[in-house]
Length: 374
Image 1 (cartoon, rainbow, N blue to C red):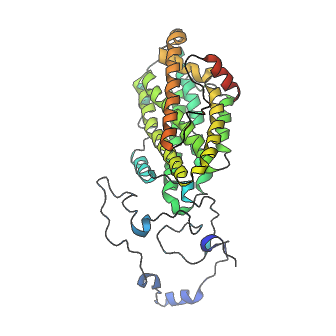
Image 2 (tube, rainbow, N blue to C red):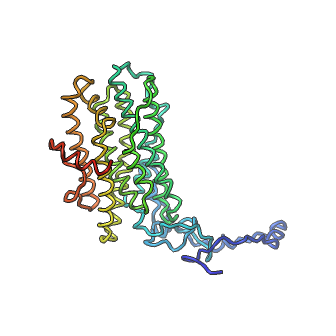
Image 3 (cartoon, helix red, strand yellow):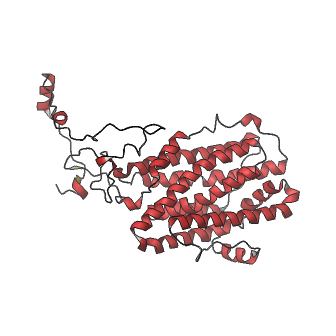
């Protein structure tokens, strides 16, 4: 039978070893696997102060992460494998396609900082708010419960295609899926908790989410989602904690923010690792981000996205036209600058070709650029 990459092959019909079964019934164990054991780490591993981490056990052969996976199998990295194994059909078989140097630490942080949207939020302490504040908050929750789930759906689409030799990346993405499911849960619950309900969704938002989900490659989608989409949401979470009307919403945004920061940190360092290994791919990443920024520019001109934040920042509908407008411009400037800083850390210069408009009062520039993405 012709084998594929590194001794993997299509699924073969398994055969039953009747001779072994007979010997086993007679009490004759094989034990070849035991007597030829040669997989020792070399010494006992000392746990870190926080416990035994993935970084602690990445030693010797177990810490050797191949640039190209030799097989497409779920056999654990560092263990012994048969010469020919079934082919799992993985498409992402190169380290640079999925890796980030901080992924082990991010995984450990993720599992240690899980929280419950049911138990850890003081739902009974939400105050009665003025209708304009409550409805503005619920509109923000509507947008966030919509966009957060893309950061579950996208990793789920690609995770099974990542080679098991990069299992730490798969483990981290599994925590991201759980995080984002919880974010969708908590914002949906807040919108319904006081009876106001969910607000309105817009097509432009869906266009950006579709762009991520339809990405041809994992790296393209990761750049759009982690660096651009989740990065901007992270900035909104920071602002949300500041302008929230009560301590309940402040805690919601704070908890979501700590989760989102991990996802953005992975995406930023993944892009940095990918570019360090293949600088020629910078133009491809620029093209991805060009498309994403063009669509996102439209979001800055959608009333259902902008005006709820203005009302919350100003403390009410009446004050929103003046105070909210100033706060909104400051927020947009901060969102863009933080995004550009992430690009700088990732090793890609977006300042010279950014598609998002500057926010120096040039409303015409904003409208012209946003119209392209509507």
